[in-house]
Length: 266
Image: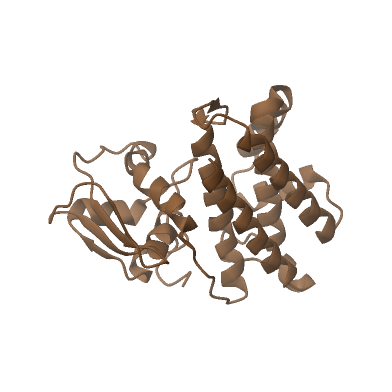
């Protein structure tokens, strides 16, 4: 648990530095992620960090906010106005206030979950999750949404071996990708062999010649978080099962989403 919480803290420090480099125009500019601005991205992360805390120690508040979210999703079908409703809900008056509140909220979330049994089941909008998986998902969300800001200002991010947490989620949600789309789950799982930022080699599943995904861990993480289309990476994908999975892979909860169009986020 300490390892993944450390990864969250490291990512938040990096994202805060990135956000601080933005001018006022960039702060409000639409990114290539559903036209969300950096302001909407930070507010989204802040809001769901708060919801994570409420899921553990304030069930009444969690239920209140869940009711707000569900009614918003029923009334509003488009992603951008939904995100704007969340920003309005937070009632932050300016950039500094929002960022400061996000940093405080994230720090509190980490402190709360450091003291929790990693196997404890935590409430969420779908099925309950173990506390460790919960924190891994929060790290994945922070890392993934950050990419839209890097893309906006055309900066290449640095990668660390912390992304193994995301690769793990990507591998573990193989079945979820199909179930979520109401598709039949393939009987065999592709062999995954990834090169970590440090140069280490990570592997999952049985090594077969029929279906495999081989390449950089960073590329794999971008595909399963739907920051990149598989065609825009250097991943070597073999076999029909592996190719189909990589074309629809989704390691995050929610309705089925489509990866970005080829060449739209590179």
